[in-house]
Length: 195
Image (cartoon, rainbow, N blue to C red; front, side, top):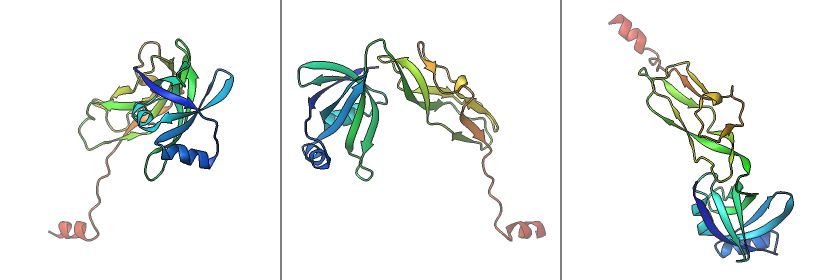
């Protein structure tokens, strides 16, 4: 996983008014916490942070006030429900070599067996434990040839080296269901039978 560098500034103003002023300047208020240290209130450049957060579980190298550098991963991101811009972000402090628990998106590859079956995603993400600097971007599951009634459990997902499953292995992640057959409209079946 690549590291994204972002410059951050400590902030001393708090509350809704201060947050609005920060956002007006195209910046995002946030908090950095972890390792038993006091939470550090920061301001991030909005565009840089938005680009970084496009990658799930991105590793961010924070240059804080040009004085210190810290590694962090996103823990909570608040977005405006209508416009989608960032309102606030919580980052967790991490160290190289440290194991963290994160949610990883599940992707599929391949084709279901013919027959009009549907793939149902029961979970979009799976919780895993991984080294902070080697978090996989996604977990890929092959659905090649699966038929109605087949289920993929968390334990069936192939994990990269050094990554351990934190979700219960028996948890169903994907299942194949029979496609809905459209019933004939009322009267259509009777007309066909008469003919």
